[in-house]
Amino acid sequence: MTHGDGGANPDATPPAAGSADTDPDAATGDAADGADGPATDDAAELTPGELADLAADDWRAALAAAGELRPPVVAEIITVHGDRGSRAIEAVAEGRVKRYRDFTVVVGYREEHIVEDGGCDCRDATYNLDTSDPSERCWHALAVDIAERVDRVDHHDMWYSEVTEFL
Image (cartoon, rainbow, N blue to C red; front, top):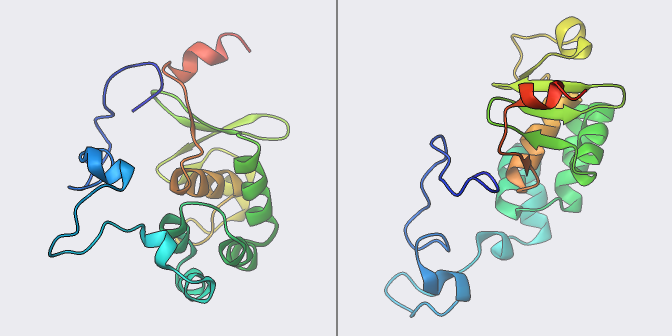
């Protein structure tokens, strides 16, 4: 859901049964212990070592499981993506990932870049990366990946073209 529109995002995955979005008891932790056991948070169950192992295999899955940028995941992002990973983490921390009705935009150092379907309109993505290798991403696309997994995308209920009219 975007902030202020009062409606659901048609592209969003429906919440799982028993999640805080569908079960009021799940949000407060008052769910009764049933055959499935008590409601638990998957990220809380991961030890730092387990999180590091998961991050080494797939930092995106580890980040989704943790729900926040934790040191083992940050280290793996930087190991895999170097300076691009560092810049992406910085952009997320500074709230520079914006989702509009039509595009997701990352505010860069000199200009804004549109990220759509994992691709970006920046020069790095256009000229330096192997588009046939999905692991090669510019820092703008990595920032979107990170921000989505830690719920740090700044939602705007407007079209990006409306924003560019003011620039």
